[in-house]
Every structure is written in C-alpha cells, then in structure tokens.
Image (cartoon, rainbow, N blue to C red; front, side, top):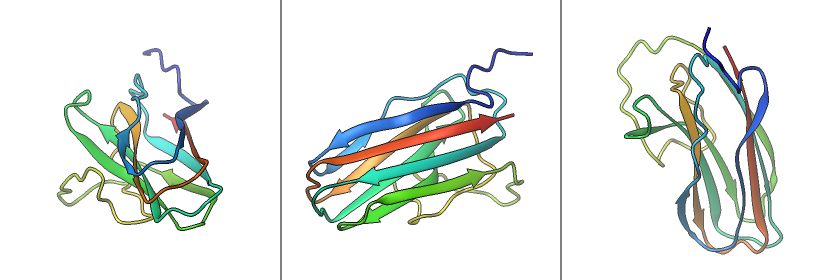
Length: 140
C-alpha cells in the first residue's frame, strides 16, 4: 500500500492574511492518492468590511495542468465565520464541465477528488486584517 502521509490526519490547505483585492492561488497539497473522502473547514475573520471573499477549494487529476473547483466558501461584507463541507465518493453519472474560480457560492461538487488540493482566493474590496484558514482531513 502506498505511503499516504495525509490519510486520516488533519492538514492545512491554506493559511493566509490579506487586505487587498485580487485572485491568488495557494500552494498545492500533494500526495493525496487514494483519497475518496474529504472534510474541509474554512475559518474567515476580518476587522473591516470588504465586498466579498470567495475561497475555492480545487483538485486536479493531471498534476496541476488543470484545476477544478470542488467547493466554494463565500463571505460577504463584514461576515466572518466557520463553515464546513464533507465531500464523498458519490458517483458522478453525468458529464461535469470543470470550473476554476466560478463554482456557485457555498456549494460542493461531490465525487471529484484528485490527488492534489489547493485554495484559490478571490477577494473584492479591501478587508483590513483579513485572515483565512482552510483545513482538511482526507480519508481513504
């Protein structure tokens, strides 16, 4: 059985402070072969309102050549908070056209778990003291 350093353990996908608007992709978490379930938690805090903060959890099946959204956490204005999703191996029985940075707000796409993960943050407006931590637990 292959070494799965993240299996059944918690790991940080993204921990970042920010203030300015823009789109930024975080570093990839790799070596997740065999993952078929994923629980993710996003904690967003800020000290002044921006417009919106979107965090797209993405996976890839081709070592990062193409990334696709599997979960979105959206926070608006002064909103802060803790949100969770659990992705499972539900069979994808219809064609899914991958998106990158455009999955609908606060939804998850089950059944699509590649071997890498990352978070893309899309910030509109200025968040003074904005901080996000996205953690996960991969299960096989």
